[in-house]
Length: 309
Length: 311
Ligand SMILES: Cc1ncc(C[n+]2csc(CCOP(=O)(O)OP(=O)(O)O)c2C)c(N)n1
Ligand SMILES: [Mg+2]
Image 1 (cartoon, rainbow over the protein chains, first blue to last red):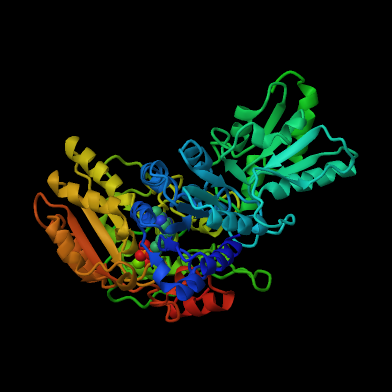
Image 2 (image 1 turned 135 degrees about the horizontal axis):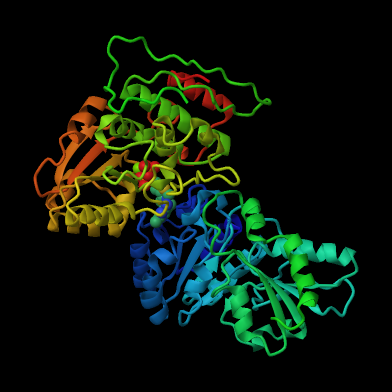
């Protein structure tokens, strides 16, 4: 995803002369092509995220569209107030880019688990929050941001994510059908944000083989979001959500805030207690219960307890 | 585990032959990295300890295909001296109340600390093999779930402010222990450090020691290219710290400085250690790329040979 990001940013910078990239001493073997093509529109602010974010806001106040770039929690939580006050409140065109969101940097430990960012940023005014699932969605997000500069957050995986579906143009909406149900009409939807969409797709595949149709949605825009924006989803009375984030304030929590009465949900999330051990993204997903098996169990639990939500 | 190491080790062993490897590596599948579980080579001096720390750090990152080895190598000598008689600690009682507190603020270099603690007997050396693996407590940024580790870091710029708080606690509670915080140079870009640097002398915290691993390289360039720190000693002095500069791989110089803190009553101490990133392995020295790269098995063998610790 970060390769798709930087390639698309370079492409957009060629036609948008006010795009500027500021990095927090990160991006080795990623950002160099941008820096060499646009030396006057690139800055390494050093390991100093608060300064990076406020100076980006300053640049933005003079007409630049600034992308700040770092990993995991450093460009978000470390400088949350700079994002809130300087960028969002002043409605300035700064796009905060975090690489390695979720559990992508699993074995780097707690400091590098990006599992609180959605909750932290979603309440901020004027902010657009994009959480693409694959390289195509990441490129689409960058195109959209270049056309629509404003306070924004781009939540990326790391490198090497597979392409999960075809994305055309910059028709960015809150949700898209990633995989229609094998034999409709389905009454169950899987809704995922970020690269964990791959787990939802795999689970749907397995269920289809068992004769259970499920529609899979990819939700890459988490803000702005209102009940209307997710209208497609509300056609399904039972929804399972997937995210590499804690429940509180995350994607499943967002859908619970918006869902009309009568819709039942299960959420596969990262528990707050997953903090003592390390492992690959794969391993930590298993520990967290972000797996195909867990998705199928979540479905079964709908029938087991018909009244709980 | 071999015999516990004596608390005090000289910088250089006197009148003993150079340490030799006594362990035999079990053979693994081709291309795999064997991790020694046999007793460590004899460690008679802090210089021996530093070599053993470097060797372990290299094995760990190779096995885990992890980054950040060069910064572990650059601070190995500081750790070896700290843990050879400077720090008051008890490996069999990691939470001994009167221990000196050591904090690693540059948490990405945790391999060197895990190795030091294992070699010192805080936990079995064999556990080092689990570094960064699924289910391990040896996270790839330092974790306080590991015996002997006071504080988890990984996000730069937290160690010194936290250390200030500990030093204040010792002062207010009239405790004899001291706080040693090891920082990187790139990390000094963070404003949080300068907030602590400003406040520590205000409260006369002469029980606080900052060690700077001044290897002149950070993540995306040299310190000179990104945000020049020079003259660093003058900056700390202007903030009312007592400052000394040493050659960061010279054990006698490091020891002389650390054994005599505080250098000025009422002032926190800053030891600026001029180091080489990747120290001890010729192809890693002063190479930005080795902030990221993980050695191949052949490179590991070469590196261990250079350190005099072949597997
Ligand atoms: C707050 C924060 N921002 C960014 C990073 C990513 N990062 C890891 S190491 C590093 C810099 C490496 O250089 P330096 O700090 O000098 O460490 P050393 O040379 O001792 O390895 C950066 C930017 C981080 N860990 N924490
Ligand atoms: Mg450095």
